[in-house]
Image 1 (spheres, rainbow, N blue to C red):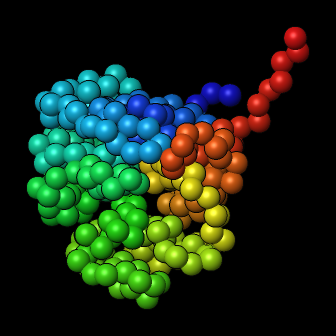
Image 2 (image 1 turned 90 degrees about the vertical axis):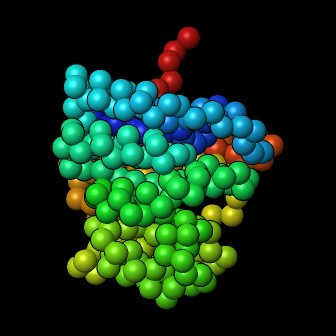
Image 3 (image 1 turned 45 degrees about the vertical axis):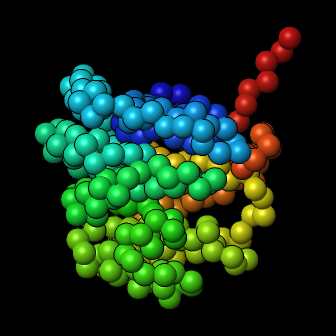
Length: 270
């Protein structure tokens, strides 16, 4: 099978392979995309938490983006962990130069163990500039609370937050409901034309490391390969849920999901 589309992934590295660029490459490949990368930071982490973060110089991040895209132009860009304002500015300027239209932003802020993955100045730049110039943002509930400054306890609050973001200049937002303590998960896609709910039964497991990274990349891959944004969100959520259900149970903490859930493994004869 040949790749159906090209995706540039701008994100941080996860040494344990469950999230970040490693999860993004696995996801894009599993769903038929050709993955390219621009690394924003290097982390030392495992399933129990993040030990440290080493940021990449903003000029080097810009070089990765520009030099890669001059040779192979992506059909879509996925932005994950940014870490600093300087890197956020470099990404913003680079994508403006390249005039790429399809951009998915996952505003990564805190790791599952509670380690902060972005500084306050970067958050402000994302709110003021970056998220208004992308196709879709995919915040979870805690991230949405930071972006809107409201407390989210139910779907009514999610709707209010979605309206705030759209009125503030965001084109489309998928608010992910995985952090809610309910039997069903509501992921809600908002746009100027209204909203659509994706409802799924909550899977009881601690092995959900990298679900946010995986979902945004899955959506980006489907979108870059020609699906509508609505359909890309639907298929991305389905892929993540299947990957959670079939997780490999690795590690002592919040384990990774199964990025191979979309692939039928060929059994070779000995």
